Length: 255
Image (cartoon, rainbow, N blue to C red; front, top):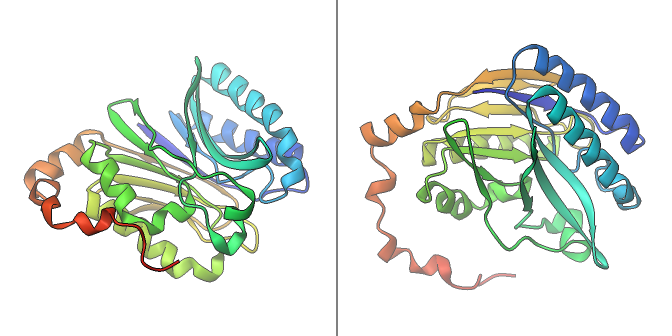
């Protein structure tokens, strides 16, 4: 499955950002991409007033998916009652395929004060892969990725708005989540400050397949047989001792 990373900067308006995104989508479509991933909150960033434009942005992405035959995934800001939701949509030629609400809200950006947290893990089947959906700060919670992997997920999608000042952790965590779960991981970030950590693709051994550091694209070929073969040849998940990990289910000791 050809998968595209769209390393995109958010413009002054959602309409302008959408125009730039559609231009990059056209490029990866010409390169034969089956799936394209856009960043977290890509049309607006944290400009809450722009959430009213989200339905228009999603309708345009849906129209592109229908016209091109591609699957398009990315993060948007939505109203949710009196608050907001940080969500990822996966849109296919025949309509919406999945919707994931960010589970772990990041205090550093004030998300717990303005947003509702997600309450469920979301997966979908796509061209031989079982795909697990996450967003940005979720990377810091390995138990989420392990729960997905135990459920058979072998491809993680991670749209993000990760600060360049913490790029060292981004580089470490993206590759660690891939390697420890023997799964592909596609992590796509914003291209503008204060974000700007590189977008990366990692294979099931944690090796970097592609990176994009300036606004632009990369297309990588993912082999659905590789995670399955690796999990049989070099057993990790089957050797877990979950009876010893019950402490993970307790409430956090530090707030």
